Every structure is written in C-alpha cells, then in structure tokens.
Length: 249
Image 1: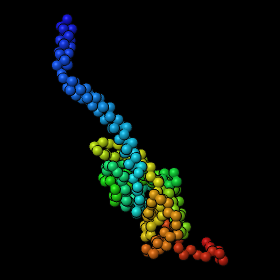
Image 2: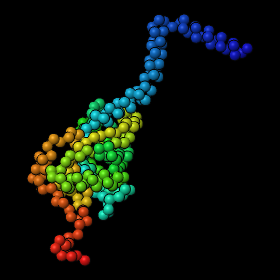
Image 3: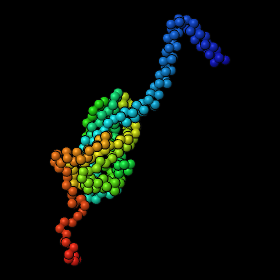
Image 4: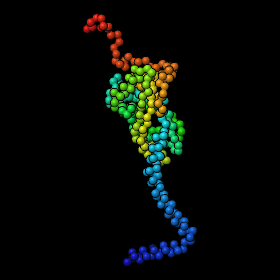
C-alpha cells in the first residue's frame, strides 16, 4: 500500500541520514535528546514538588514580630459575628534565596489553640531580609468570649501575663512567576502596650516568649504609664448609694 511504501521510504531516509552523520554529530544528537528528557522531567518536578516545598520552607522561616498590633471592636458590645478594626505594624524577616509577593488571603487569629476571629492579610511584596509592614483591616469576631477573656486578663493583672497569639491560614504567594499556597502557622507571645484604646487591645508580640513581664511593666510605666482600668468598660454605674447601713429602694 502507499502507506507502507511511505513508511519504508522514511526509514530508508533516516537510516541514510544516520549513516552520513559523523560520530561527533551522533554524540551531539544523543546528548540533545538526553537534555530534552531531563528538562521534561525536572521542570515539572521543580514546579510541582521542589517549588512548593521551598515556598513552605521560606514561609516557615520568615520571622514575624508585631511591633504594635491594635484591635478595636466596633460598637459597645462584643459579640460573635461582630467586627473590629485591626491596625498592624510588623517587622518581617524573609530568608534567602528569594523574595516573595503575598496576595490577599484569610488569616485566622487564635490564642492557645482557640480561634477568635479572622482578617484578610493584604498584598505585600517582601524582599530577602528585613521588611517593615503596616496595614489596617476589618476583623471578624468569631469567639467573643476568648477576646473578652484576653482583655480582662490584662486589665485585672499587674504585671500583665504573657499571652499566646497564633496566626494560621493558607497563604497565597508569587515567586519567580510561579504561584504557591503554603500554610501559615505562626506562634507569637504578646504583652500589652501602654496608651491603648478605651475598648480594645494594643500589644507587642514576638516569636520568643518574654521571660520578665515585670521588666516590661516597668518599661511601659516609664514610657507613659499603663492605661488605667476603664470603669465604662465594665458597665459600672458611678455614685451608687451605700446600702450597707440603710435600706435601698
């Protein structure tokens, strides 16, 4: 058939070309085929295996310090499903070898493993080394009791105790033109900052747990004294009559 004749002619042509090639050309052809094969294997491995692991390693090794994080609930009552304004100033140290661009993703805050709300981490381009990040975001409250317990703990204790803050979520990151989704799992240790809002929390959080809260309290007092306990926060009514000796209506 014509198909069989065509195949036979193609085989003869390729055999003739191979016979006419010198040993050097044959070697180059073989090497070229090997290189193409290696590229066909290593490029997908790099994109789908090495790349995600490298992105995860970079995110895990990024050192985050919240130099000033302030959470201000909106409204007089803190409830599940309510919201707050989050103001963040942070230092982020990104490890070598690559910078990364984070695109908005949901980050959930927790304390000692209990989630209490979430916000959208904004777009940030991080170079290798030290980065200063500042942003504002809406914060959705999912566990009002945990948030209130945190605030009350700092208000009622002097010196204030160190409290755990966790950040977790699925980050979205670009690097070298590739898109990755590493897991965010950051554990920080927080102490209150002086001069915070009437209804809210201002704090500094570090990767290392502070060992001397008393020294922090002294430093805060020297910087302007800790915020006094706000009577309005507890809903207390001032100037109640003394009912210990007389009957009250």
